[in-house]
Length: 296
Ligand SMILES: NC(=O)c1ccc[n+]([C@@H]2O[C@H](COP(=O)([O-])OP(=O)(O)OC[C@H]3O[C@@H](n4cnc5c(N)ncnc54)[C@H](O)[C@@H]3O)[C@@H](O)[C@H]2O)c1
Picture 1 (cartoon, helix red, strand yellow):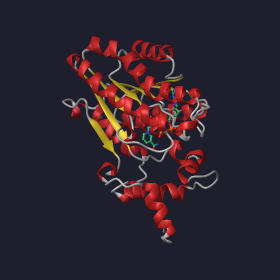
Picture 2: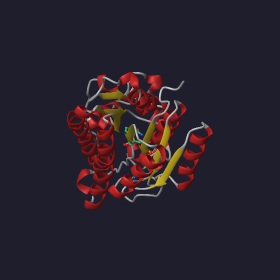
Picture 3: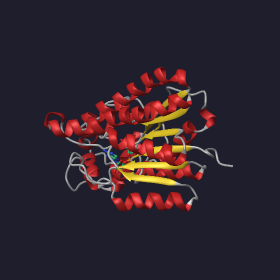
Picture 4: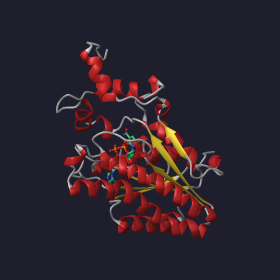
């Protein structure tokens, strides 16, 4: 018996990374799955998005688990794309019980250099895309008087971060959507919760473009450096660079009946990051390097 037998879940950004992991985790527990992913590059990001081949891999891996899947190339910047998938899901599977608003991008730049276009793109995907996903699913869930909406934000929904202002602003906004939607939809038996991942080992984090921004220069980023940085970012050193499965485990719990009395939760899956005392990192590291202390 699976924890989601007979359920249907819609996941945005499910072609790879955390989204694919969510799709497989929910399918493993018995859910049929709907996936929407842009599967094409987006200029504002310094790394590539998923490809049609990635999306095909999600399809075959879900099917290998014996579950049904409808996966489409679509964009959370389009209400029509989301509405069409919801409509297809309802006509094929009869209902949708779970929505995971996971699609997102990160765009790095000094805040005074961010272009209007890049700002608008990140807000459109990471903030408005989450709202559109909720909007597409809410009428159906209201009609059925049940549903679990799981909105993926970030530690950056609750603290600042350098060189990614649009991302941080959008993720803070997702927290606002969670709190307001949980209040508004609770009367219909719909739960709305937020998962705030720490540093997760996916292409968003481990691609060269991102690694270089974290390292402070083109060509300087290495996977080893991001692993070390993640260790300083977290309390649980062995879990610092999170396997996407850790986030999927939280999503699964929020999707399941086990969390039926839980709504409006900020669920931090961050290896304890939020417990750490704040430091002025540039000052601290500049002084440490000046004193000859190496990162090893
Ligand atoms: N990786 C991390 O360290 C980290 C940390 C905290 C939060 N997050 C969040 O987790 C979520 C998943 O990210 P990930 O780590 O799996 O990254 P990822 O880049 O591997 O996956 C993101 C997926 O979203 C898709 N996507 C991007 N824009 C889209 C759009 N407009 N419409 C539809 N699909 C789109 C991409 O094609 C890709 O498949 C994002 O919301 C991200 O902000 C990631």
